[in-house]
Amino acid sequence: MTRSTTSTARPSRAAPKQERGVQTRERLLDVAGELLGEVGIERISTNMICARAGLTPPALYRYFKDKYAVLEALGLRLMDRQNVVLSAWLDRYAPKGLTAVADHIEDLLRATAKVTAAEPGAIWTLRALRAVPQLAHVRIESHRMVTDRLVKAYAPLVPELSKKVLWRRVRMSVEFGFAVDEMLNEESRLKREDVIKEAARMLRWSLRDPE
Amino acid sequence: MTRSTTSTARPSRAAPKQERGVQTRERLLDVAGELLGEVGIERISTNMICARAGLTPPALYRYFKDKYAVLEALGLRLMDRQNVVLSAWLDRYAPKGLTAVADHIEDLLRATAKVTAAEPGAIWTLRALRAVPQLAHVRIESHRMVTDRLVKAYAPLVPELSKKVLWRRVRMSVEFGFAVDEMLNEESRLKREDVIKEAARMLRWSLRDPE
DNA sequence: TGTACATCAGTGAACGCGCGTTCACTGATGTAC
DNA sequence: TGTACATCAGTGAACGCGCGTTCACTGATGTAC
Image (tube, rainbow over the protein chains, first blue to last red):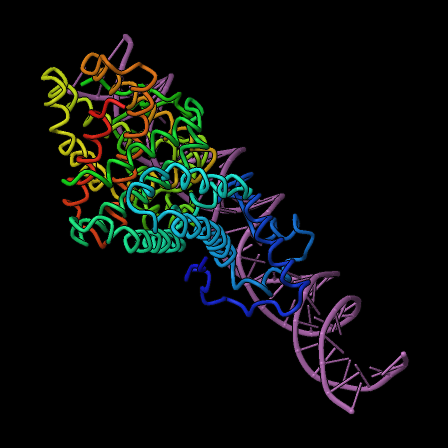
């Protein structure tokens, strides 16, 4: 399980040196996620995050350069966790060939959804990343990275596809996969399990169909 | 071309009675869209919108109950325009049968993308709708309505699919379609035309495949 | 093992600023006779 | 056709509030000898 490169984002502040500091930083991110879910990107504030975390504002600025750095770090942490899941999945099925991969897309979707569900406000974090111009790059870069990794694994399995076409198809599948992840929480008229199965079905075709 | 029901959202304020008022309201929405694209949902403000529109703040509150009403109206206007496109497409191809429809998904994507491209800040409007809890319903309701209309048109063309499965597949296709629309503007590594063609290909399969 | 000292983590209090919104009003437009 | 009046559209000025951020400081933790 390799870690993603996005996790090494140039820290806006030096990383904490003591265990206490590490935990405080994590708590600030947890609280920020919670509040994103509760009040939304529109209303969240640094003062609010500090109050909920039981800290005074200057403590936050010890760990984050500004408000956007908090949200960026929150997004990076989430995507990093999703990448861990992707790595595990690739390690497990990619060596077994195309059929094994295609037959287990469902598992990948489910595992990714589990990460999203576990983190408070994760869905709102993803949405905020897209909606705030200053943060949009985090999401795009992460999706590209996921695409690159998948392309690397798939390339030998589908030699008939050019690298260009493969990259495009995988990139779009990644976008679809994350859209599905969001829909799971958003569309109450559909059952989660059904959506996952259906998405896996669609994605299987996107891979196999030669043209 | 029937108009969408979403366009009849309970007005937070009475509609303008004079032509001057109608134009002012439109201008406020245009400016709001522009600013969403320029500064993002995080920084946009009613005062900023008024300043750019050459009005004083109370003028805005004559047409909109509060800040969210502006953004909601902006979202409704955009989705209404997309619905007009959908209606035209359905009127044109649905009567000709499944093959005609499947063969022209590309056109629908292109026409929808054109609407998004024409409106300043349209992409950011869509993102804001998703990211702000108070506005999220607009997007969901619009996507459901689009789904309902497509399902109605498709149902007789694919009698082998249960209503439930059909609704689910169409709903997910709609989500995918809009995700693609956003990606067109976001993923600079892919050519717009390629993305549209590829998306149409994927969507064709989602319709035809029996299970 | 004890202590002096360096470094790290967090506080108290406040700042200037622009936010969303409203009040009481004036100017523009439409209409009845 | 002209004018009095009703309604609609927009203004000037301000409000209380909470925002993001910082300064100078104290308390907690780790380390060298």
